[in-house]
Image 1 (cartoon, helix red, strand yellow):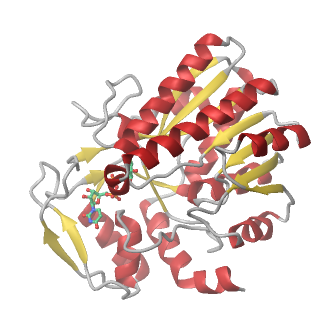
Image 2 (spheres, rainbow, N blue to C red):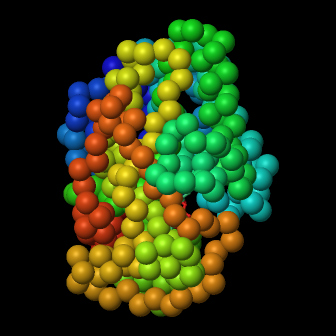
Length: 337
Ligand code: UFG
């Protein structure tokens, strides 16, 4: 298949490009580098030894999308391009609604124009809000607590309405749990600008001594050791889930929802201890107050993705800790060569 990847230079997008190319698909990437680096494209080529087409620009730019669809016969789209910082979405809600909704709507309009009907969407476990029980299944009630999460839920609704209106449309919605880790080569990974909000990027910065110590947000939750529990999934496993999803999209109609997680929850302390052990390095931490909006525990029931997509994660929490650190300690080299 020839697959358009929006946000293909981003963290999850770039790993997915590698898996698609290695599986023999052709890809076309569109990215505006708002949260990524052009060097990522070279690194995808280095890993796969494959060529692909690239367009620099914004997915809200309809003329650009029409040009892409005119110049390439696109069979399916995987839509990653979006803003993703929870805190920023609270202070800049309009920026989030404008960007995260307009991109999808423009994409869908152009797909209709060019008779392309296969869509895989990058959603999030955030749409489950504060779940009443665990593990989380796809049919649990949905709610959100911040504009970022609301854009994910609104996108899901838009896609579902489009699939209802057009019986030829096939939509696969993937709800990610907590992606961490990096490509084993050290050539692709996550390195957010500024002080990281998420746990693993923060741990890595403490390990490299760029930050003095980790704040653990709360040790009085009703969990195994009092710290928050999450379902961490290796980004390479997550990327492989997109390969399964694109194959499903090509052979089904309507809208389908899948959790992409491992089904196992680890606490903040467990992740810190595993990181220290695997990388043989200290990560100093302090217990800090709970972070507003956090829930105690969140982990997936991955059964549906296994039964219907044949998706099963393979990489361990040790792999995730090793690869996250390896990417950061080698990245100067890979991004500046
Ligand atoms: N945590 C700390 N210290 C930090 C950062 C995080 O203790 O400096 C804790 C949090 O309290 C939480 C856990 O680490 O218990 C994970 O926090 P993250 O910020 O890494 O991830 P979240 O689970 O809060 O959110 C992530 C994504 C969201 C997505 C959500 C889906 O950031 O975009 O998973 O479940 F919506």
